[in-house]
Length: 204
Image 1 (cartoon, rainbow, N blue to C red):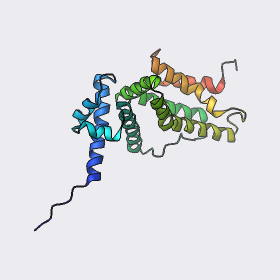
Image 2: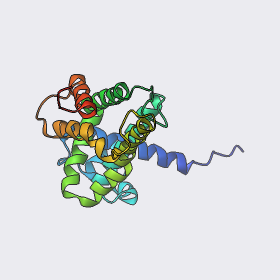
Image 3: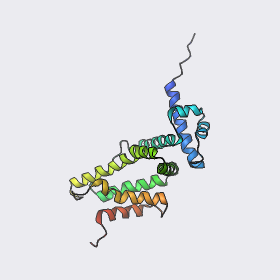
Image 4: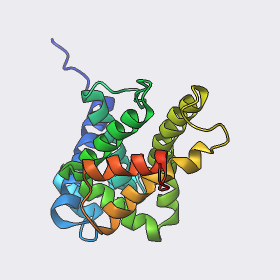
């Protein structure tokens, strides 16, 4: 008598988790964050509501984890794991390249809806905001710190400059323009941010 294979619970759980990620991201894009519910995610993913509550306490937590996973998958597909800001010896060119890639991501429909939802929810949900910063934003900002410190070591940036503050000269304006939709975000815009940040506003 041939024994039936024993179901692999780990594989089944991973399949369910992946379906939940996909459902959460799709629903936020289709109906918006306020109308996205745990019940809707469960129905879309083909799992029980209790399955989701067993792994996550809220829809915000589901979406954050799904968004982090989306970023990891995109980086893996692009062969950019682990990711570092390039160091070609030309700081301005390197910063412009990574900010152009950031523009592409912010305008990518796969990323835009969930990232806007998480940013909005983070304004009123302190715990989610802390997790969003710790798990996503701070690791990305540290990459800028590392690149600016490397530039300090070669004399391209003054040694007294605080890299953590300096990076905000080009990262923060981009984030504000994107969040508040005050104007389009473009390559020309981020290139100009880098030029202003590195070379200042005074006559040369």
